[in-house]
Length: 427
Image 1 (spheres, rainbow, N blue to C red):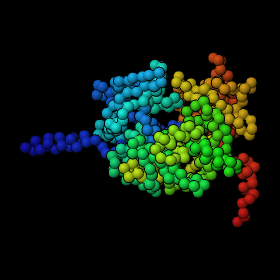
Image 2: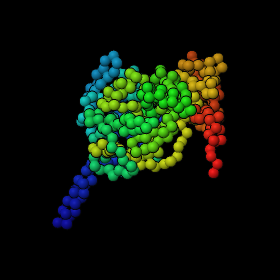
Image 3: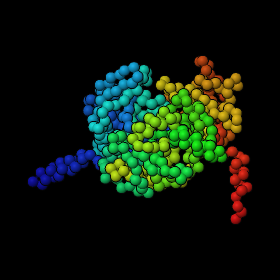
Image 4: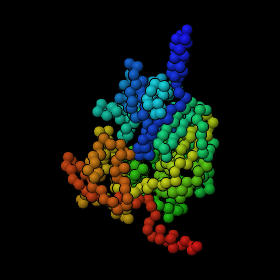
C-alpha cells in the first residue's frame, strides 16, 4: 500500500513538473545594440534545432532564413523578389535557469501569424535572414504583443511571460499599441512640442522625419552633426547610408524619460509616409536601442503600458570609431561604402593614398572580418580617439594594409567646448 502511494506521488510530481512555465529568462547578446537570443525550432522528427533569434519589436512582419524554414519542413513558395511560407504553430525558448531541461521549455505561439517572410537568397546564403546578423528568425511585434516582455539591457537578459505574470518595476508610461501589429508609439516631446515616437529596440539608431530633423539642425547649428552613417548609424549598409545626416538632439522627452544627447538621423519623406501608415497613427519617428542601453524596458501590452527601470548611468562612447560606412554582403564580406570626413578631411586615408569606395575590409589589427556580424566588426573599429588601427584591405583580389586612427565623431568641436568652459560662472 505504501509503495502504491509512493508511486502515485511520483507520478503526480512528474505531471506537475511537465507543466509549461509561465515565463522564461534568456541571456542576451547585444550585437550592434540589437537584442539577439537563442531560439529553438520544432523539427518534423520531434526534436528541436537551436538558432539565433532577433528581438525586433519595431517590425510587424515575422521573417526567417530559408534554412530555418527548410529545417522545419515549411512549404516555401517564391517569386522573383521574395519567398513566403505558412508559419509553424510555435517556436521554443529554453529558460536559462533550468539548464535547458524540458521543464524550462516555453512555447511561443505563432498562431496569429498569417505568413512568414523569407528573403530570396542564393543557396550559398540560405542561412542569411539579414546580412551582418547571426539571427535566422525575428521575434516581431505581432508575436510579442501576446505576452509580457522585459528587455534588461544592463544585465543582458530577455524575459517573456504569459500576460499578467511579470511584476514590472520602474516608472511607467501609457503608450499607444497598434491592436493589429503590436507596434508601440510613446507620447514624446521635442522642443516643447508633442509628438509620438515609436519604441524600436530592433533599431540601432533613432530616426526623425526629415522635415523635423532639418528644422532642428537649422535652429541649432551648435548641436553636433555630421554626414555619413558610421558606428551605430550604419544600420544595414544601404546605398544611401554614406549620405545620411546625423544630429545629436540635445534633449527630448520619451514618455517619462528625459533623454539628452540623442544621436538621430532623418527618415526620407517616402519612408516616413510608409512608416506612419504602418504605425496607424501620426508619428514623427522612432527611438532606437542605442538611446536606451541603461534601462530595463518592460512591455505590458495587455495594459498599453511601458516601464523604464534605470540600471546604469554609464554613458559609453558611441561614435569613437574608424569613419567607415560598411555593407555586409551575403557571402560574409564587408564592402566599404563610404568614408566620413573629420575636420574637413577624409577620416581614413582614401583614394590614391589608400582606400577606395568598393574595397573590402578583410581584417582589423590582424583579426579577420569576413563572416562576422556588424556588431563584431564595429567592436573592432571602435576605441579611444587617436588609437591606431591596422586595416587589411582587398581590391581586385589584391590585399594591402592601411593605418587609420579612431576619431571622436559627432562630438562638440574643441572651440565650442572651450567656449562653454570659459562661459561657466565661477562658484
